Amino acid sequence: MRSPHVVVVMGVAGTGKTTIGPLLAARLGVPYAEGDDFHPEANIAKMSAGVPLDDADRWPWLDAIGAWAHGRAGLGGVVSCSALKRSYRDRLRAAAPGLVFVHLVGDRELIGERMTHRQGHFMPTALLDSQFATLQPLRADEPGVAVDVSGTPEEITERAVAALGELDRPSR
Image (cartoon, one colour):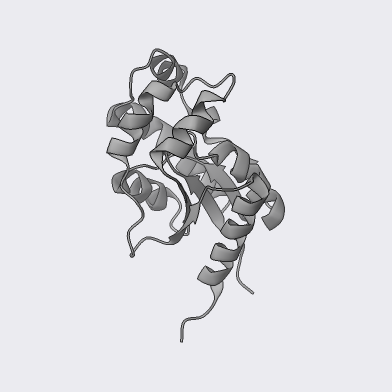
Protein backbone atom coordinates (compact mmCIF):
# COMPACT_ATOMS: atom_id res chain seq x y z
CA MET A 1 0.00 0.00 0.00
CA ARG A 2 1.20 3.51 -0.82
CA SER A 3 2.01 5.85 2.03
CA PRO A 4 -0.18 8.96 2.27
CA HIS A 5 0.82 11.96 0.21
CA VAL A 6 2.15 15.17 1.62
CA VAL A 7 0.23 17.66 -0.50
CA VAL A 8 0.92 21.34 -1.10
CA VAL A 9 -2.25 23.20 -2.10
CA MET A 10 -0.85 25.99 -4.28
CA GLY A 11 -2.05 28.92 -6.37
CA VAL A 12 -2.35 32.67 -6.44
CA ALA A 13 -4.03 34.54 -3.60
CA GLY A 14 -7.78 34.12 -3.57
CA THR A 15 -7.94 30.66 -5.18
CA GLY A 16 -9.15 29.12 -1.93
CA LYS A 17 -6.03 27.44 -0.54
CA THR A 18 -7.11 28.12 3.05
CA THR A 19 -10.62 26.80 2.35
CA ILE A 20 -9.73 23.77 0.22
CA GLY A 21 -6.65 22.73 2.22
CA PRO A 22 -8.52 21.73 5.40
CA LEU A 23 -11.32 20.09 3.39
CA LEU A 24 -8.78 18.08 1.40
CA ALA A 25 -6.89 17.11 4.57
CA ALA A 26 -10.12 15.91 6.16
CA ARG A 27 -10.97 13.82 3.08
CA LEU A 28 -7.48 12.31 3.08
CA GLY A 29 -7.49 11.78 6.87
CA VAL A 30 -4.28 13.75 7.43
CA PRO A 31 -3.36 16.96 9.30
CA TYR A 32 -3.55 20.40 7.72
CA ALA A 33 -1.07 23.26 8.15
CA GLU A 34 -1.87 26.83 7.09
CA GLY A 35 1.04 28.12 5.01
CA ASP A 36 0.46 31.72 6.08
CA ASP A 37 1.28 30.69 9.66
CA PHE A 38 4.87 29.99 8.57
CA HIS A 39 5.46 33.60 7.42
CA PRO A 40 7.77 35.73 9.56
CA GLU A 41 6.08 38.88 10.92
CA ALA A 42 8.17 41.03 8.55
CA ASN A 43 6.59 39.28 5.54
CA ILE A 44 3.06 39.82 6.86
CA ALA A 45 3.80 43.50 7.51
CA LYS A 46 5.20 43.91 4.00
CA MET A 47 2.20 42.25 2.32
CA SER A 48 -0.26 44.14 4.54
CA ALA A 49 1.33 47.35 3.28
CA GLY A 50 0.70 46.23 -0.32
CA VAL A 51 4.36 45.44 -1.03
CA PRO A 52 5.01 42.14 -2.85
CA LEU A 53 7.53 39.79 -1.28
CA ASP A 54 10.80 39.14 -3.06
CA ASP A 55 12.64 35.83 -3.16
CA ALA A 56 14.83 36.74 -0.18
CA ASP A 57 11.64 37.24 1.86
CA ARG A 58 10.25 33.90 0.75
CA TRP A 59 13.23 31.58 1.39
CA PRO A 60 12.80 31.33 5.21
CA TRP A 61 9.05 30.86 4.74
CA LEU A 62 9.53 28.09 2.17
CA ASP A 63 12.18 26.44 4.35
CA ALA A 64 9.77 26.37 7.31
CA ILE A 65 7.03 24.80 5.16
CA GLY A 66 9.55 22.34 3.72
CA ALA A 67 10.61 21.32 7.23
CA TRP A 68 6.98 20.69 8.20
CA ALA A 69 6.42 18.65 5.02
CA HIS A 70 9.62 16.67 5.64
CA GLY A 71 8.35 15.80 9.11
CA ARG A 72 5.12 14.45 7.58
CA ALA A 73 6.88 12.17 5.04
CA GLY A 74 5.29 8.73 5.14
CA LEU A 75 2.50 10.05 7.37
CA GLY A 76 0.74 12.40 4.97
CA GLY A 77 -0.38 15.95 5.38
CA VAL A 78 -1.73 18.97 3.54
CA VAL A 79 -0.20 22.44 3.65
CA SER A 80 -1.21 25.57 1.79
CA CYS A 81 1.51 27.57 0.06
CA SER A 82 1.29 29.80 -2.99
CA ALA A 83 4.41 28.07 -4.48
CA LEU A 84 4.07 30.34 -7.50
CA LYS A 85 7.50 29.73 -9.05
CA ARG A 86 9.16 26.51 -10.10
CA SER A 87 12.19 27.48 -7.98
CA TYR A 88 9.94 27.67 -4.90
CA ARG A 89 8.49 24.23 -5.59
CA ASP A 90 12.00 22.87 -6.21
CA ARG A 91 13.08 24.25 -2.83
CA LEU A 92 10.09 22.60 -1.13
CA ARG A 93 10.82 19.28 -2.89
CA ALA A 94 14.49 19.51 -1.84
CA ALA A 95 13.31 19.51 1.79
CA ALA A 96 10.53 16.95 1.25
CA PRO A 97 11.16 14.96 -1.96
CA GLY A 98 7.80 13.16 -2.06
CA LEU A 99 5.66 16.31 -2.20
CA VAL A 100 2.67 16.41 -4.53
CA PHE A 101 1.09 19.70 -5.61
CA VAL A 102 -2.58 20.55 -6.08
CA HIS A 103 -2.57 23.73 -8.15
CA LEU A 104 -5.84 25.61 -7.72
CA VAL A 105 -6.49 27.46 -10.98
CA GLY A 106 -9.06 30.01 -12.07
CA ASP A 107 -9.36 33.14 -14.15
CA ARG A 108 -8.38 36.59 -12.88
CA GLU A 109 -11.99 37.84 -12.83
CA LEU A 110 -13.34 35.02 -10.65
CA ILE A 111 -10.42 35.14 -8.21
CA GLY A 112 -10.49 38.94 -7.97
CA GLU A 113 -14.21 38.82 -7.22
CA ARG A 114 -13.66 36.28 -4.45
CA MET A 115 -10.86 38.37 -2.95
CA THR A 116 -13.08 41.44 -2.72
CA HIS A 117 -15.42 39.51 -0.42
CA ARG A 118 -12.67 38.16 1.88
CA GLN A 119 -12.56 39.52 5.40
CA GLY A 120 -9.57 39.81 7.71
CA HIS A 121 -6.82 38.64 5.36
CA PHE A 122 -3.54 40.53 5.09
CA MET A 123 -3.15 40.05 1.31
CA PRO A 124 -4.80 42.97 -0.50
CA THR A 125 -6.52 42.48 -3.87
CA ALA A 126 -4.05 45.03 -5.28
CA LEU A 127 -1.32 42.35 -5.19
CA LEU A 128 -3.29 39.84 -7.27
CA ASP A 129 -1.82 41.05 -10.58
CA SER A 130 1.71 40.60 -9.22
CA GLN A 131 0.77 37.06 -8.20
CA PHE A 132 -0.45 36.22 -11.71
CA ALA A 133 2.69 37.81 -13.19
CA THR A 134 4.88 35.63 -10.96
CA LEU A 135 2.91 32.39 -11.44
CA GLN A 136 4.69 29.55 -13.22
CA PRO A 137 2.13 26.74 -13.54
CA LEU A 138 3.10 23.16 -12.78
CA ARG A 139 5.18 21.57 -15.52
CA ALA A 140 4.68 18.02 -16.79
CA ASP A 141 7.75 16.82 -14.86
CA GLU A 142 6.39 18.10 -11.52
CA PRO A 143 4.30 15.72 -9.41
CA GLY A 144 0.89 17.28 -9.13
CA VAL A 145 -2.46 18.17 -10.60
CA ALA A 146 -4.30 21.32 -11.64
CA VAL A 147 -7.80 21.73 -10.22
CA ASP A 148 -10.32 24.32 -11.41
CA VAL A 149 -11.68 26.58 -8.64
CA SER A 150 -15.13 27.17 -10.08
CA GLY A 151 -18.00 25.80 -8.02
CA THR A 152 -18.41 25.16 -4.32
CA PRO A 153 -15.54 24.28 -1.97
CA GLU A 154 -16.94 20.75 -1.75
CA GLU A 155 -16.94 20.39 -5.58
CA ILE A 156 -13.38 21.70 -5.80
CA THR A 157 -12.27 19.30 -3.06
CA GLU A 158 -13.93 16.38 -4.87
CA ARG A 159 -12.04 17.28 -8.07
CA ALA A 160 -8.78 17.44 -6.09
CA VAL A 161 -9.36 14.05 -4.45
CA ALA A 162 -10.22 12.48 -7.82
CA ALA A 163 -7.16 14.02 -9.50
CA LEU A 164 -4.86 12.84 -6.72
CA GLY A 165 -6.37 9.37 -7.07
CA GLU A 166 -5.41 9.39 -10.73
CA LEU A 167 -1.79 10.09 -9.76
CA ASP A 168 -1.79 6.86 -7.75
CA ARG A 169 -3.03 4.73 -10.62
CA PRO A 170 -0.29 2.73 -12.32
CA SER A 171 0.37 3.85 -15.89
CA ARG A 172 0.00 1.26 -18.58
